[in-house]
Amino acid sequence: MRKPNLLFIMTDQQKATSLDLYNSQVNFIKTSALRELAREGTVFNASYCPYPLCVPSRISMLTGMHPSFSGYVANTPFIEDRHDTIFQAAKKRGYRTMLVGKDHAYCEASIGGDNGHHPKFMDNIFDKMYCALHNGYQPPEIERDLPHVRPWLNQTDVLHRIWGSEIAPWNSDQSVTARLCQVAEEYIQEWDRVDRKTDTPFCMWLSFPDPHEYYQAPKDVVECIDPATIQLPPNWESDIGGRAEYIQFMHWYFNSGGVPQEEVKKLIRVYLAMCMNVDIWLGKLFSFLKKNGIWEETLIVFTSDHGDFNGEHQLIQKFNCGYDGCCRVPLIMAWPGRSVQGRVYEHPVSLVDIPSTICDILGWERLREDQGNSMKDVLFDETPSEREFTVYESGVAGESLTKKDIPNFPGHRFDVEPIGRWSYDPPHRFGGKMYAVRTKDYKLIVRQDQANEFYDMKTDPWETRNVYNDTSYTAQIIKHFSHLSEYLVKVSQKRAGSSIAPQDEWYRAGGNLQWEQSLPEKFANANKK
Image (cartoon, rainbow, N blue to C red; front, side):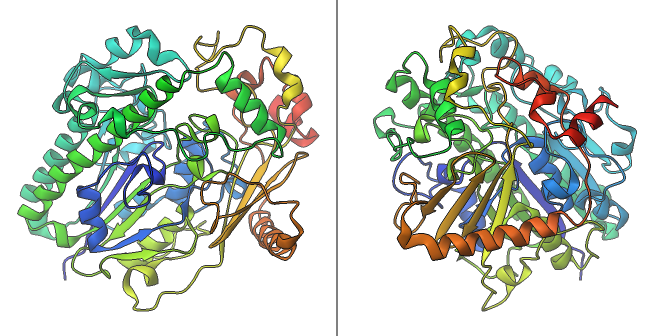
């Protein structure tokens, strides 16, 4: 039998409830391509990112290492070549390897590509690379092929605001998403001509920058979404008074000045259009795979590195927290014609489990440092095992911001771009360690030196009520702490050291803490070296 291909599809910052596969209540898109993929395999209904930030989450899902174990807990540094990833594993096994889109794990995608610069070891991993990024930076290949994108992103001031969103002055076929799917098809066509006849399979990482901010979408796609259907999220007015003070500070930070509800609804509409544009172009790519007999020869994974609040709890973007809007992501896996069809798996899983699952299905040895749990049985067995819990995390040791820090930000408003930082980078956004424990029915959120939170996900899926102090949940809370202890033992087996980002000092500037005051002594000393 021919070795199966691997198509690993990733979006950036897509919450699970943006898709009708996960949410039919409010603010979702009707999928076509992804629903087609779901019919061929499994939708993981409770899938969580290991860390709600691009680089740590991507490194975890490529290596199978939990962030605390690996030490990668910020957007720099990027992964070192001493670590195994699924793409290195594919290359060693004779696969034709390709990167199309946003990397942000091996290096900053804005300097990648055929005409740019990237770490030398990436040439030993990927046979072909075509990179893309979001916001006002783009690699040479996008500048060459889509010269209209970057100037408009940089010149449109509203995009630089916290709740800023805009309808792009071009149609879907002129978007970065479209170009990436076109390149993916071109690369596969070349593989079909050159390598398929020798039974050399391909391994492609197709990684879309959308729906990460800047929030902008092609005009013809936005027009497909009726603005009258957009509503404020069900938890827009949730009570945050009994939650961690860090959450209360962030609520103030994103809303200071009084964000108009119409601006929120516009952003939600544009965000959903970004998600819809991905689904449209994936549909074209899937049709190409079917037409050329590649569909049933390919293991396909679709997911996102983390979510986006998109108005939930009156919050936006992502930061150091454990709520579903930020951390629950879509995950669909299928080997068309071979995997169990149309399964919805309700038990909690982590993106850390992806490498072990891929290796198990394809018959590879596990990656050297992989800590994940294979989900092969969920895709192929008549009766899969029931996973009891998953744990995800964020933040670095030290204090989190509180409401007492608000006076340190005089003049701050939601509609004015902060001086010296991106609008979506509030200072100190990853100060203070957070862990979240998710079981099938409940969630515990523990934050260093601040209030703990507990949610009954059966009766309160939008996390509107913190029931941590409700004694009727005491037994369940104790059980969740036991799960957390099990996780902490697992990630402490190796002293990871510090990979705290130098830029994190920049994030913290303006808060009540100096950089070295906010870290344990061992980390502060490591940072001086």
